Length: 498
Image 1 (cartoon, rainbow, N blue to C red):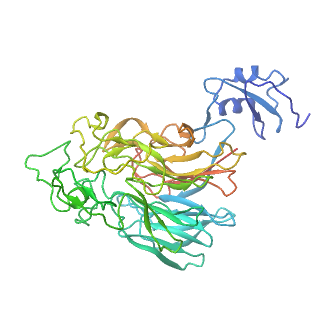
Image 2 (cartoon, rainbow, N blue to C red):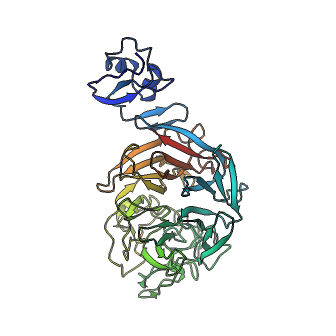
Image 3 (cartoon, helix red, strand yellow):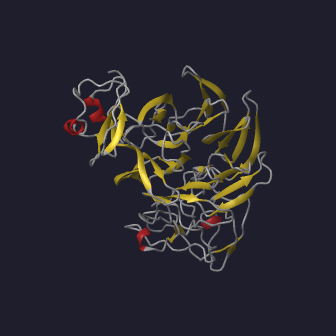
């Protein structure tokens, strides 16, 4: 009987058969044995004849928590599916939706070797064609947000700025002369329930010391991190070469090559300046009233407000590089409170860098740069594997999609660090974070990141559509870290739905 339904006793989950499903394809989709699914559904008189709309039981088992999409090589929870929604993008970093629900994409203009594309904003038309809305921004463009009647664009070239763009193409600079252009850029702009603008500026350096690992140094030799507070320095000096591979006669760093741009002397006080690096800012919608909201963050690339109106951020941990390498530094998911200090450059997830776990195998134990540490904020909501590259996120608000109130965080991923393979891939997934318990669960996992991968490459944003029924994953594409060379038109937008 067409459309038949049964009240099943199911030690697992109920799955609604769709057109084109077979018992074999359903078993494969859910990663379970064909015999197990047949035994769990004794009511099926002929398992080879399934009808759309009927429900069958997917039994629990060691693989019942995962579904492997054979076409794209990703793992998802049962009941979810993925498809490529937009293709042929070049280094996209974000999407946003206007009041009508139209999707807009920003291509960053990021350059990898000879590969570069204009920084531009695209509109996805109803027939899935793409129209260029605007271009000519200062790359890399690291965020786009629609608010009320216009876009707010994060331009991370030096100096950085926030630009307001209208649909007719006119634009105005909202905030200018931001100290971007170092190792880390601006976050996207977000707006709170107070109708204030929030954005972040990442640090210029890895761990507070300018050195040979800073690729921008030849262009901006006097650039350095700018503290948001008055600090008394601990009196450390550093050599200009990487301490993991020092050379005889390496000079002591002077001038711009020091913590916060100064030669470090005992009891020296470094004055605060504005705007500073490693900070989250609040401003009015027109850019006026800009002030530091919180500081001591390193690379808060993703910002967002929870359904209850609290501000959260991702923050990327320090690396084993430069004149002050730090090993095993987690990426974190943080709840951000006004006036609080989150520990950079002397703490990782509120654990001091003097802890032995942060000592590189062949390098010195990191020591404090600062003597007068401000009070630390509470510990992070969650920690991610080092080098996961925690990026942009969004919160589920739809019971139909599931996991209401949880944050879905894109982890960009690394196979290598400083040219050496990691013991196992870090990131390459979208995870969900329970912000009440801090528990992290995989949601979408790229099973084989690398040259043979058929699906997403580098997730850089997870963003729900306005009604929350679908999750879109922005895929940055090939930048030369997965065994394939950097390439144009390898970025995409992936759609995940039930």
